[in-house]
Figure 1: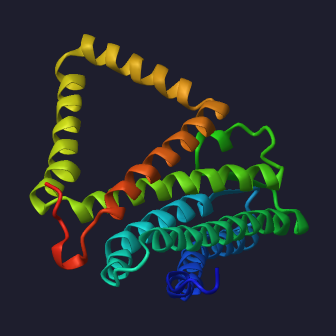
Figure 2 (figure 1 turned 135 degrees about the horizontal axis):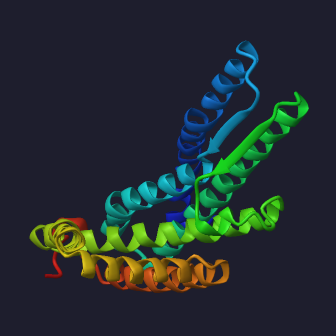
Length: 254
């Protein structure tokens, strides 16, 4: 693995990527916690309610980093005209390392904040803003279950960014605008128009969407769907990039 020049290139970015995610976690989690604790002791508050955002930050960081690398750094590697399979595999190795460290760091921060509250006898309620699986409470005091769920969810987020980035690299700009801006905008516009213009259809559509949401948010269903779509998106993204031209001739597909 160390002899792979692509991996050596990507490996140099791992500390920087981890630092970016850790800074985001500190800014959005640790600093607000310190401010809330100060307010708790200075104003003699009866309790403390704190919203953990570490999983959201990890997902957002993984999504943005994958998108950036797919559109900027992978094309640079394609210009070398080397082994594309090795290049793509090296990219995923780097992202898996980043995801593992980011997820572990986030969970450690959350458990540390909870421990600090217990240490100082602070009556605190922690809420986690993340996937429906983590809202259940069952097993959510088990660090290994949390790590597993967030690792799978992070891979799913990475796969979404990967397929979006690979499509953006291959499609012509007018089709990128069509696929990523116009079509979603029109769909949302039509849905909102139906919801507000026809109450009966809106209620029926709302009921259907709610039923789908309740079904998907079942823990085992969520995990299975995330795994299946992760594999599917990565396969499609690989198809786009393995046959992609060098950056000079990007946006060649349609």
